[in-house]
Image 1 (cartoon, rainbow, N blue to C red):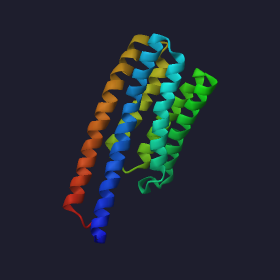
Image 2: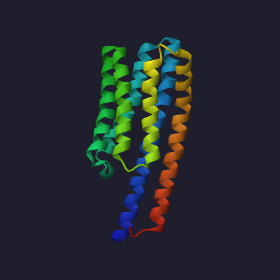
Image 3: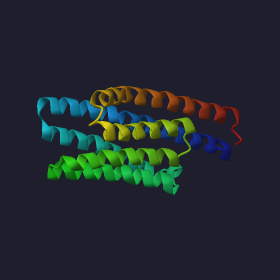
Length: 188
């Protein structure tokens, strides 16, 4: 294989890798909400901790894999991945200590880590803003939940559905554009 073909293959793998991570990170809040709703509704606190830990350990494994990928060699992306890994480790310690306050910290670190990671990668500006706006909106909802309970619940419910859909669409669109650019300009 020529050097040009190797560059095309590597660029294609990188785009696919970023697409997978971006979409995976966007579905974590929805999956986490479903787990929390089903476990708390049935009164299974310990099962909730175990399920949350499994979700975040899977994300930590993805973050550790991404840490060693060449596309995440800059300090911003690696900092985001460290936050994601710390989020999983804190969730694991909350399972061991049976302390729900640590779950809140774990969720905050996950949001911060996802946002930082998005800004440290060559994703499109629209996609970066999508990640950032979602977690900023969730932080605002957390601050206003005591004053505006009904409105906050409505915003969170809509955001949980819209965020993964919008992120998946924007990520697929970005990846398609990148693949198209590679196919039409293989010498770059």
